Length: 462
Image 1 (cartoon, helix red, strand yellow):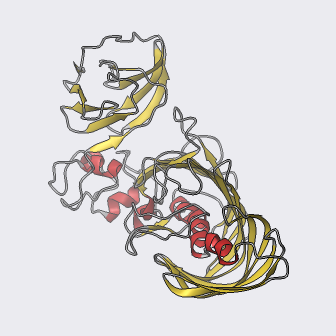
Image 2 (cartoon, one colour; image 1 turned 135 degrees about the horizontal axis):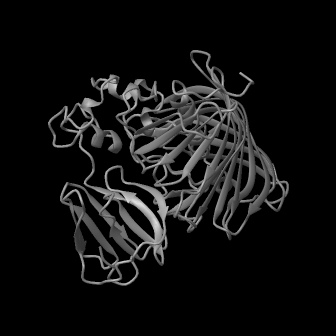
Image 3 (cartoon, helix red, strand yellow; image 1 turned 90 degrees about the vertical axis):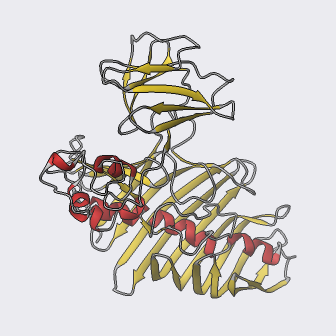
């Protein structure tokens, strides 16, 4: 379809999956850097399958870094004919380049497997800029005539272009894709100037990085959406999307917005496993449906209906899939699998409320830059995170989400009050760990928050 998608509670999951979805159990890994040709650490781990994930996986599978090493910027007129082994299969490069390493080369992927992804077929690469000191193509465009690309969660033919730009001094990479895919059932997707920019601590040996995404993604059934990213509140400068490691599939935090025809869905990362989806179906700026789920559940029965008929905070298709009642709020605080966690707690954590072998992680990391003290509001039970003198943002200890900003509050400004009890009788305790810059807040009702990056050895008080 060439028209904009109309986003609703019943298709927002599928539309989101088309852009940032995943296969298998969430929490897998994929190297995002265009510099590296490494694959995932495990063939069975979750893989991103949406358009943005495809560009990352395709960049790794096309081995853009190996393309630079394969000829090393051959001298003018020198013939290039090299075969590089993949994890299995091979990649053959032929042609000639100028003395500065630029030119056009032919590439043949012969069942070339990188990690768990395999590519087979011909391509050409136009090299517009080459860093001879690092043997890296700093600006190259791969034109794919027709190749087959397969791996966890995907198997299709694709055509189009992928441009890879690397700025070594700025430690950044930019991938621009204009790709058409078609699976065995004839379903097509297309990216139009989809740009993924990553900024690393070290582009040649990356650990953490930030990412921004822009462009348009088409789906043969739903239509197209425009993709943009935003920095989550109180996380600057670590955004828009922040990845704590170079091998994870999804961001620790950040916001991705998909905009269709007078409608949108806002995807907020709650960690590498879980995201929150907020649907505005008519473009009035008011959220019509909110859902929490693993990234890998977007395009499944769990993500089929994000409305919440009974208003219990759990969306309809989640309740239906796991045997709860989408028309009764009575099951919100019950424990269907008897593992000690309510259905709602498991819902927010992205775990299975019908299996006592699936339980929420005991630790949830919350990132807030510039915080210097904490308090509990006895009236609401919310944790007050002080950013300035008397002002800051609230944290809900149930949903573990930042809420409204506040001002005019009295900051504790003490160093020895490490325990406080709220109006509901819950006691919160601040405790140091073996690492001086890491402390924990434990609730008597269950659950632990970890505070990291604390200046000095005392984060303040409760």
